[in-house]
Amino acid sequence: MIYLQLLWVFVKIGVLGFGGGYAMLSLIQHEVVDHYAWMTTTEFADMVAISQMTPGPISINLATYVGYTTAGFGGSLLASFALCLPSVIMVYLILRLFMKKKDNPLMDNTLKGLKPAIAGLIFAAGLSMMNTQNFSDFGRGQHNISVIVCVLSFVASYFFKANPILLIVLSGIIGFIAY
Image 1 (cartoon, helix red, strand yellow):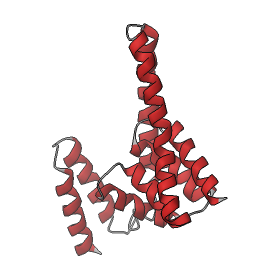
Image 2 (cartoon, helix red, strand yellow):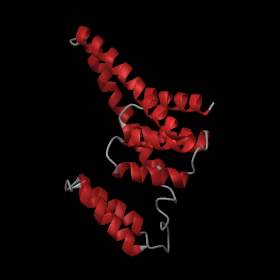
Image 3 (cartoon, helix red, strand yellow):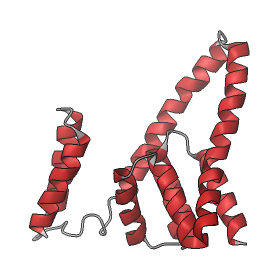
């Protein structure tokens, strides 16, 4: 039964998760933490952090981890495969359609219409990660170090195009010293 649930969950996420791994985070969290309770919010936040540091797409890393923790090695293979399957099918079909209709304005407008949806999914994923597990020192009378590190990392990355690996290492050092 767990294999069918894993297959259903990750095929559904693969179909609905436009915009890449970060856009899928809120969908994965809803299914894995809220709906099926395969892991806690804290475990999910930890796995997101680990998935960002390991090679490969974050959504595949999360699917592999969820599959492994719920159904072992076979579950990890199934969850990863199920997440990728809709994308492979859609890319194949879209490429066939695009080659036939590449000069059609409807095709161009459809692709432009997906951009706001992708931005919204990424924003929702960012909001869902702003919780007490990730910002445990936030609030009046607190040090707010995690919030300061988050804001400084964003500013350095977005405005100054700082190296993300350097930001991760510096944030880890600050966290180690502060906590």
